[in-house]
Every structure is written in structure tokens, then in C-alpha cells.
Image 1: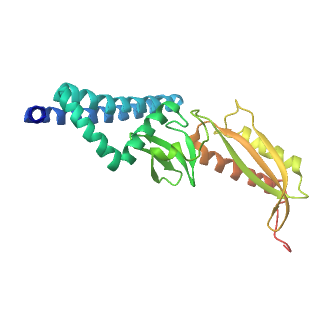
Image 2: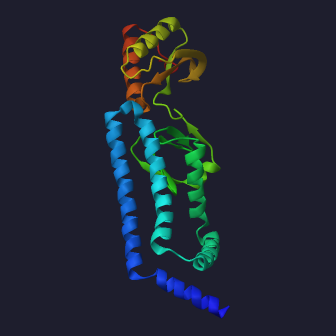
Image 3: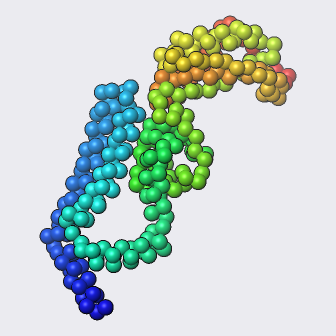
Length: 270
């Protein structure tokens, strides 16, 4: 037993030689630079081929996973060249340490790999997670980064996506359904209002007309009185233009409602 301990200590001292540690640090730096280059290259491809933006983002995410995980494993074996005894000893100790003190990080790491292959959502998707809505801008080893429509960057541990509900608005596609509500008075010209909405959607530069759009109607209570809710379910050509599309539709529809005297709900007594 003592002889084995002496052999392991000697092997560890050999691994921790200055030249090997320097090579390890240089290798880590190269991995970080390569990952940064992949991100910059993906941005360039996205600008040149916007219709392939989501595919480029997904490929870049996979490449970054391969670089970080594969590169780290390669560096350990190629640079440090640890003997079998050291690997077993360090592996056992590391397993205990990870199990007690790093369990959350390891859970997020495993969850990140699961997310990459199970793909409940992808980079570029518009998702709703709890009370947070925005675009997935990165799936990392430990966290998912989500950019809200208010331009706030939200960081969420990967493990939470395995247990909590997440809804994807476009599921890997560029186009996405946008639901826009309009309220009109109970005695308003419903058919005319629906016709106006159809006309505005059909002429919007943000509309994706290869997919059908429709306007649904139902009676609701608003402003303390009965009204008609017109729900326009239309597709935007790129999910990045979601709010521009909604603003374009709302502004033009309301302008035409006023022009054609489409009655709107009012408060009691007004």
C-alpha cells in the first residue's frame, strides 16, 4: 500500500511539471480563442445568409460544445498524460468532491448535453420560461442565455429546463405565429372590421403569407361591458421582427377603424 502511494505521488509530481502545465494553459487559451472565432464566424454567416440564421446558430452551438468538452479531454490525455493509477485515484476523489460540492454544476452540465440532443428548443427560438419571454441566444455548458424583448440578458441554469415547462414559439423555424387582439363594440360592423384586418396583414412587409392566417371572433367583457374580440393569428416572416410586425398591424388597423367608423368599446356612460 505504501509503495502504491509513493508511486502515485511520484506520478503526480511528474504530471505537474512546469512545461506540461504551461502547455495545458496554452491549450485552454487556444480552445477559448477557437470558440470565440466560431461565434464571430457564425455572426458573419448570419449577416450574409439571414434565411439560414437559425441553422448557423445551432451548428455554432454544437461546435462550441465539441470544442470545450472534446478539447479539454484531449488536453488532459495529450499534455498531462496521466498514468492509470493517477486517473483512478484522482477520479475517485473527484467523484466524491463533485457529488457533494459541485452537484448543481454537474447537473447543469449534463442537462446542457441533454438539451443539445433532445432539443426542446434551439438557439434562435422565442421561448416562454416561467414569466420570462425572449430569444435563446446561447446554450452553454452550464446555463442557457435568453434575451428578453426589453433587451435584458437572462441566465438560467440548464438543469431547470429538465423539470420546468418551457414553450417554444417557432420550434427551430424562422417564421412564427403572432396573435394580435382587437376589441370592437357589440354593434360594430364585424365583417368590415375583419376585412380591414385581412387587408392590413396581406400588405405588411413583415407578414409570412405562405402560411394561412385567420381572424377569430368571440364575445367578451371589456371596459365593463360586452364587446367583440377579434383575434388575428398571423405569421411573421422572421421571429426577430415580432414586435415590429405587431406594431405595424396595430397602427394601421386602428387608423382604418377610425376612418371607416368601426365602433370601439367604451366605458359605461360614455
